[in-house]
Length: 365
Ligand SMILES: *Cc1c(COP(=O)(O)O)cnc(C)c1O
Image (cartoon, rainbow, N blue to C red; front, side, top):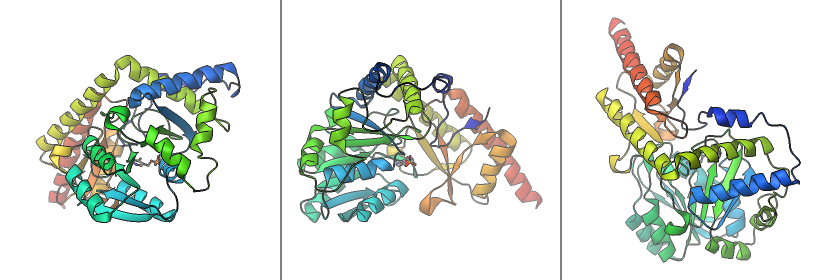
């Protein structure tokens, strides 16, 4: 089987694959109600919240739009923290909705610090919300979300958190850290196929919802909550994906959320150490290195595309290229969700062989 090491979509555990064999159920019947209630209870645990978590069909990106149309109003001033390609994308969504978007850019590979966010908020005047990418999947850097959220809160702004490649794999505490809106997609640390958007909604977000004037229908939080209280969704849910999510959450709760976090941190450290042993450089600020994805600088004289091709064709290991401005100069090793030490060691052995081969070929040529 291919060692599938993309930073999303991620491999599906056998129990998740098996769950998707299940026949359809009545989406207004008792089995659905029990299923959805159980999923939401487990999602609350995984987000460390006693507040609301809701699920829609959609990819992770839909979460930005959902946050905007429910919590904000046209022309609202927002601050977008940009340290990589996903920060860029979410900025474009905010612009598309006619928000007054201010940016705080830091060089790719850096994290943004809480002090920098505080300075930007002082400078930009009253800001309604701050968009923060918890784990920047392009650069392999995790922003210090807890500290950032505290500063955002102290400035009276909402935190809208892209946790697509973090929640379920690394510490994230909605209630304790006072996060207002946390969005993710099923195909990353949740170990499910792509196709579900998951959002945790805190109490201040509900206040903002009441004041928001954007038109909305499919993404209406209040409607989704009303149905969720009955164990249902407003429209037909993606039932097969809910079966998968239920099985995946069962795996997470069996392993234990904190054990899952610790496994990711240990595998990420193993990956970085192995990459360095091979003489390569990990991209980004080491102090903020991600637990779910490692971005590696492609060695001088090696073409990223060729390295990825050899890994795939000769070693059956699928890695991902870089993104945005570092597309050609980096590649990425995903280690989120269903991943073990053996998977990482296999990647490192494959990279050792590939580099030896690519370098020999370069010398021969
Ligand atoms: C993958 C990813 C997204 C986009 O998710 P889609 O499901 O492709 O829409 C957004 N943000 C981050 C940080 C991601 O890793």
